[in-house]
Image 1 (tube, rainbow, N blue to C red):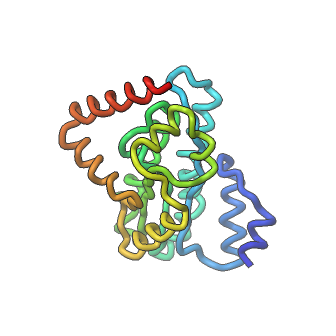
Image 2: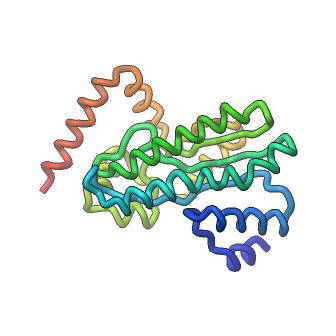
Length: 215
């Protein structure tokens, strides 16, 4: 079963060769891939002063892993004239995540890549969805509570259970939505941002000040 494939190949998505092996093993075991979920992510906090290693890791996992998945899975999908890529970004890729420049910047890039894939291959039968949740109860977020980036996520909205996010994903895939937003308020925040960018920035600075002033 699929569990046996997973046990044999735990994939380091920051390595293109490892992603290629994963795709080949899945195809050999089960045939053509109808849906590829590119879900791995890493949270690195700080600003420009964050270590180069943190910036590089963020880029490799939050962006290049999606590139490698597309390189590996798309050719067969395009040849068949059908296929679906689900790429997990974050609400941070539409808005931002205070206290976490490497995370925010690379999640913006992930959204941009998903947009590009949807535009470029949509007429060839390829569907693309970009998952952009806010806080989800995962080890990555739980490990950031008490730090500025984690506190900012919690301040922006409630923490959603993974099962609820999965239900939102299934619903979004069913209707083939590009943006899957398990936290519906993200759409409102995004509309406010593009409606008046300067006002949105002022509001985010106020939130930044409140978080920084916390004891």
